[in-house]
Amino acid sequence: MIFIIIIFLFFLSSSELSFAVEIASDTLERFEREKKNVATGNVRITGESFTLTADRAIHFEEKNEVEAKGNIYYEDEEIRVWAEEAYIKLDEKTGTLKNALIHVKFRDFWIKAEEIERLSEIKYKAKKATFSTCEPEKDRAQPWCFTAETVDLIVDEILFSTATTFRVKDIPIAFTPFFWGPGGNNRKSGFLPLNLGFSKIKGFQISPAYFLVIDSNKDA
Image 1: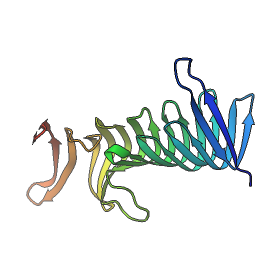
Image 2: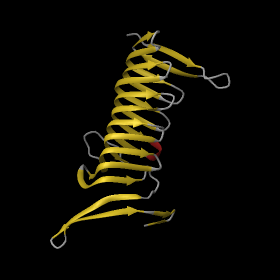
Image 3: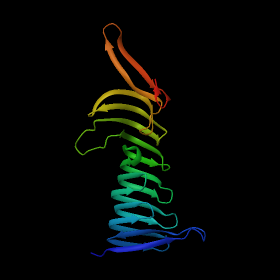
Image 4: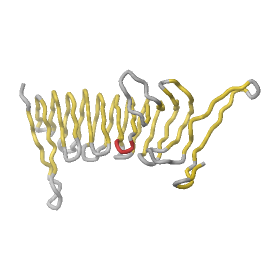
């Protein structure tokens, strides 16, 4: 088996430093006309601040973008990603992930979804998603999590989701059509999961709640 390494240098300008993207794989094909490189088998692409591994990847030189498939792992300063398919803009650190799990490192936040869009280094959109601060484990339910039809997250700002179910050990506890909450571990104002109940006198009851951060040591 031949292990191939090829390095591309992109010169930004005379006043800026150059940076390199390195591609290593079992086989590597270069297509001059399309300005692309097709890497297959044990693919590893590294740059100044990221690492990407996959079974197969196509690197588009002019846009510095990668289309990857199979056993994808991506990591930069902010996140770690596991996915089946990905299209990543390496310069902007944005892109689309399929059947993916994202770990936002500094806020210890986990999102697992059928599709995740990274719109910026702090902004995400997800479909058919599960989110929690508990790390998912194979064949084991998370201590708690939310499942949602869609999720919009701005790290350290806000999280908004639709058709959301709060689960404890994979047991559904409460449902809400819309959910607002903090986008990290810092305390933020936002709606809490609905409290549901039933009594013979009052019948079915719904108790909405809102958490208000007044000051660093005050809340309501």
